Amino acid sequence: MTGKHLTATFLATVLLFPGLPAFADEAVVERWYAALVTVDEDTLSSLLAEDAEMKLLDLGVVQSKPEFLASLDEWREAAHGLVVRYRIEGVTEGATMVLACYDFPANHVLMRETFAISGERIAKNVQMRLAENCEAY
Image (cartoon, rainbow, N blue to C red; front, side, top):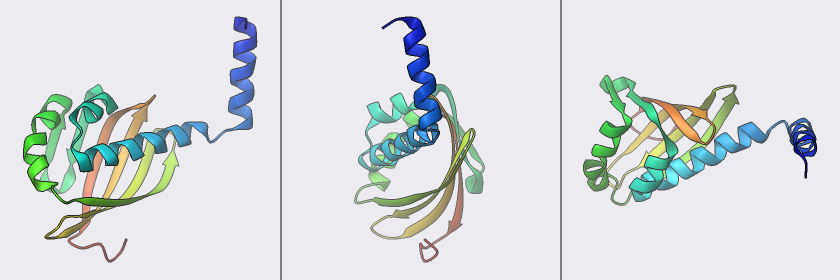
């Protein structure tokens, strides 16, 4: 296929399926939560852009990719038995908003998370605790 045909095919795909970028962002979010629950360090690392930033607003913590990955040993202990339920509340250009319930064996936490996704990598994740339970989920 020539470059001209590839370009035409790509443009036709984008015009026929305008939700594809949003679908791609949703796939990244799905992979993120699956890897977070299983503490799959390789997948988490591959999902984060090299200059990714993780912001935990309620704790006043900002982590770089290396800092986040270094914290996974501690997370592994906390995440034992964790189930995460989430739903995407909206996708706008540059941001995917998620409502997530972290069901730990001893407690539950409701979070609002915003992902800035570029390509198939997370450039920024901003987390805000909404409640100490998931009743509003």
